[in-house]
Length: 418
Ligand code: EPZ
Image (tube, rainbow, N blue to C red; front, side):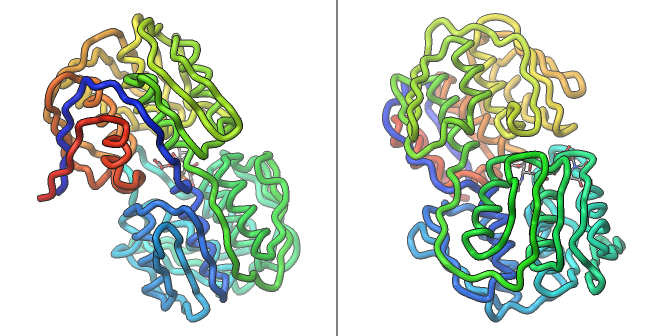
């Protein structure tokens, strides 16, 4: 069980290179199941979630290896198997193999996924969508068994713009017969990136980024090279770190248009942010004002994956801020750890009331999920003295050796391996 020791209070200065987005690369890796050729993904971070996804491909005979930050995948010898909880228990994204398995093999047997415990995380939208494609779905003994012998592309209406359900239905339709139209679909940048990847490999996916996506079935996909979109959540995390403690922090290789809601809130609170086409420069402001109300929403609204990090920031803003978590019903559980560090946060159901400024103090805290865990890192960077963060394995799921990037910015952080 690795843990971090952080001596907080230092100002941050320097550059951070943002790598490929976890939540774009995971569905793209799943998509490789239906590509009988070599795919090279460039500028990929080394994350435990990516390793967990590659394990699923390798167990079916796929080849997957890193060459520095290139991920080389070849599923020409992949054969379907019952993917049990040994493989799916680690991450929610394991659900995304269903679509490609149906496209390529017209069947799938996958155990229920694991992932961050931030809510019930049902899969009904995935199931309803697949049934719209005439897939028969059985759920028993913790497994999801799909029979696509009669499947055909068709119209699909999502009750809610679910990211994963949108991705699964796109991938289930790529090698299908006819045209699938997905209405009320998710519009996240990671959806656009999956569509771009599929089109680069010979697929026909149109309308990604809007609330209607059209997929025209093709016979097969080719291999090739692809540069996944940069991780807007990792970028937003470092942007908040800079707004909290930055003398001057420069984020390279980011797409500022993916972070508009966060930029707007940080600037409104008094942070100094300069945007150009591929960089963001951020400095802390001494007069940080509370942000009256923030609500997490599907893209392009305020991202739920930046909610914990932003709550830490609000704890250092003068006045009373309110955050409403509309996406997941249990995504404030990290605040108990922040309260140990002195934060004044009251949570009732999906609403958090944050009163700043309360100076954060060193403490021994434990990460219980990915984004709540990285929020504790941000809090420890602010807190004078030596903080200890347990449960670093949660943070490693979505941040590639975050201690190296933070050390590069002047944070006194070390990883103790147990
Ligand atoms: C993806 O999860 C991301 N994960 C999450 O990031 C992200 O928070 C989420 O999208 C929302 O943006 C990956 O891409 C691997 P959803 P996903 O389906 O697909 C409900 C991180 O920290 N819902 O858009 O699981 C669900 O309960 C992770 O990187 C149903 O009701 O999210 C939630 O309330 C955390 N039925 C809402 O929709 C379903 O069948 C959004 O879920 C599916 C979802």
